[in-house]
Structures are given as structure tokens and as C-alpha cells.
Image 1 (tube, rainbow, N blue to C red):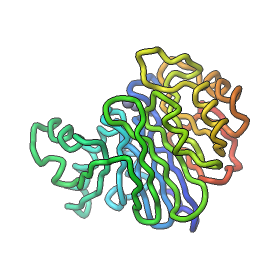
Image 2 (image 1 turned 60 degrees about the vertical axis):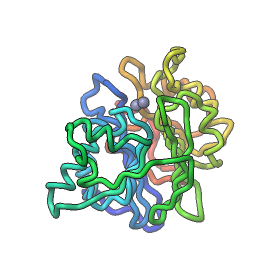
Image 3 (image 1 turned 135 degrees about the vertical axis):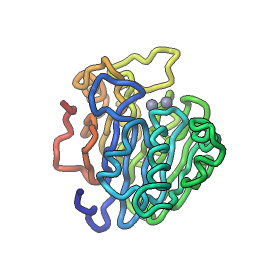
Image 4 (image 1 turned 180 degrees about the horizontal axis):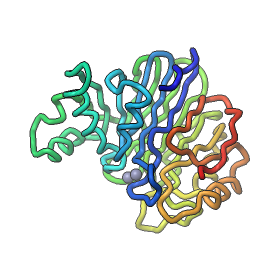
Length: 269
Ligand SMILES: [Zn+2]
Ligand SMILES: [Zn+2]
């Protein structure tokens, strides 16, 4: 188990940072844990990421899981969370889940069982809105990707920079209104140095770098790199456009948000 976050600090644990498929062992689906004081929220819960989550904290104490969109690499381990809550230690328990319309039905269909999801997950439908969960504020913005897709800005209520998580996003301009100077940008970079094929609603390094530069983010934390793209070339393609700290995150990474970390942000091996 890791130490509890320092009082007042907004902290990110990278639980899973993989894309939809990968040849990198351990590159499990998107899952990012943000904690502040006694509040813990999880951004996405993609394939294979539940075990690492359960090693970081008791998943039953999550204040909310926030799902960006209905691609399995962003939500499918809600099945594992549901089973854990229903049958695991201290069962039965419940967790609040915020996601696009239709999320509960997708989970029910996996088991061909109406009410499967509702047995342990309190699912609410996201809109473009501002939410308060514990000591955290969540701003929800729509992005172009697949059906209803959202990006999120998470910050401590009332002060300081936060983190903007892109989810999967096909148009960097959708993110710009959400970003405040000094925020950390946790951005998908599916197509590495680029370019993104016309038919793919994702980002590449140059588009992330240009967005970071014009919005004045503090750091760029890259994630969701597709199989076949070189991490070093990907980081370099962002560095050519943004002068701040840049790194490709990996499961197990921890960051204190809003203040540059002393640790180097280098590509994961
Ligand atoms: Zn994805
Ligand atoms: Zn997607």
C-alpha cells in the first residue's frame, strides 16, 4: 500500500494507461485515481486495471468513478468493481458511477441480466456540467470522439490549478475552454508523432503540443499511446511545440498536481 496523500495536495495515481490493444505487458486500460484530502475519484476503469486499483486503496471507498465514454478500454473493469462490491470483503457495498447515457445497459447486456449493474453501482448520467464530489470539483465538457464522449477538469474546490483529462478526443479545440493556466494536462496521444488518420477521432503529439502551448498548461502527461508508436518520438513531437515538462505516464506513476514534480518526466521504458 502507498502512503496517504499529503494534506491539501491533489494527487494523481496512474492505475492504467493503455489504449484499446497493446503488445506491452501491463498496459491495462485507462484508469486514473485523483485524491484530495479524504476524497477519491477514479477517471475511467478500462480493461485489466481493477487489480492495480485494489492495490492502491479499497475500491469500496471511492467517492465516484467518472467514465469518459463507452469504449471498453475506458469502462469494462466496472464489471470487476461490481463483483467486488457485491461479493468482496464487507459486501454488499455500493459506489457512485457517473457516465454517458446507456452505461448501465451496456453492463447489464454483458451478463444478459437486467439489474446486474444496479446491484452495486449507482449510475448517474453525465451532462456538460459542474459537479462537486467531496472536496473536488469536476467540470464536464463534451469532446468529439465516439457518441457521447467527455473530458474532465478536476480541481480542489476554491483554489489552485487542477488536472484536465482528455479521455479520448478527436479535436483538441474542444479541450481548450476547459484548461486554466497551470493545470496539468493528462492527454491521450494515440497516434504518437502523428498524423492521425482522417477516420480516427484521436490526438497526436503535435496537436497536444499546440494545445498545451496556447493554453499555458503546467505539465503534459501523455497516455493512451497506440501499439507501434515510439515513446521517444512521441514526446519529442510534443516538445517541439511546448516548452514545459512532458512525459509519457505508466501504471504506478504518482504525481502531485498543480506544482511541478521534482522527478523527471521521461518516457517510460
Ligand atoms: Zn481509448
Ligand atoms: Zn475511445
